[in-house]
Length: 527
Image (cartoon, rainbow, N blue to C red; front, side, top):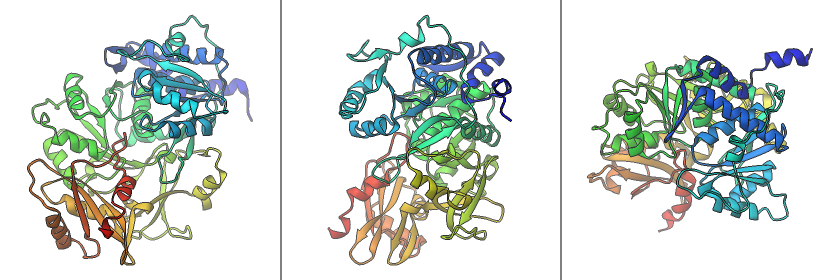
């Protein structure tokens, strides 16, 4: 039976975390952003001021607030201030074009648009593209070294440093939506994934326990906060625990290495592509990285040879593999340090608060070792796709959330991800997992990065292709890579086409964008 007096005492939503942590660690450093250092008391004070200012501006529970910004302390405050009053935060990828941003603004129905000063030009174009649609209130984050203001934009500092009286608390229940994350999927338009405090809090607990996180951590956040991995696996759990967070604007290898040394970083997350960039950087061996104790990777599988190299060159670092997706808030399975080498390439076991199964095309569970679609049951799961009941029903059919990934479980419940359904190559009637081919090519000493994808072929329907980035000084040729692949793989799995390039296309999260490679090389079989 619902009792509002009881509910207000029992509430433990995302917006409550800064206040409760500030009571435990008031003077401890919460956020380091360049020259700005905020204690937990100061951080919670800013959250309180901003949430009150939003309410006094007429922004109400259930309204959507979009944010377009690189990593900064203001972004972190926004994430908790909106959650505190039940306003739904809509983080937007700062690499998107104005038309894509405009679509998200319109689809989400955002009434407030908060934008970093440097991104105002593309944001203005996005707002103009809305046409007759009601334009959101525009708020600018002025960063050091940028213009003080913009025409038509109010400065967010008016809210942070105003004398606005504090508003009364807002009742935010466990399953009230507080986040709307737009996926970067394969469809023409991204889907909006609704997350609640319940989804996120249970996911934080899974990350903290299975990821051995603690209040003593000093974590470096270099990947973008608009992405749920950096925001919800690491930054917000750090605030929950009372750990210190160091923010960087981007994943520049030289800056990451320098910051690990200068701030005595103990904990760091990055996708494999960023870990590879650190290993290849000329200052890696001359930088003092001995403070680093915990390393995390995700977004894509870590090549086994790179995993071995990390453990050899950073012997004091324990590694975790976090596998999941936005719809799981995002973690679903975790591979811990003890199994990194004995089960290299595995995505690990279901996280603490997750149940994982492999399903066939009839949504029936299959035996261990059998490839099928990866599915989950968990409080981590999304509330559904915003304004898309059809996709929600499709994803949640028959009592499971369907991930769209293919994989299998071993007898001990460890998951191996074979491929995304969209990345499975069907060549001459045979299925080829792009990841298996990538692992084979990584066995070559001179390979720095590789991406395998399918291209249209007049005879085989689809053919295996690989774009490869070489290590400096490597003399590998396209034919040598093809010959090696044929020596370790079945002939139909070996790439028919190899392209050597200087770099692979990646999104700001460091994930290789295979869609661009398929488009770039669509006619390679016809040349």
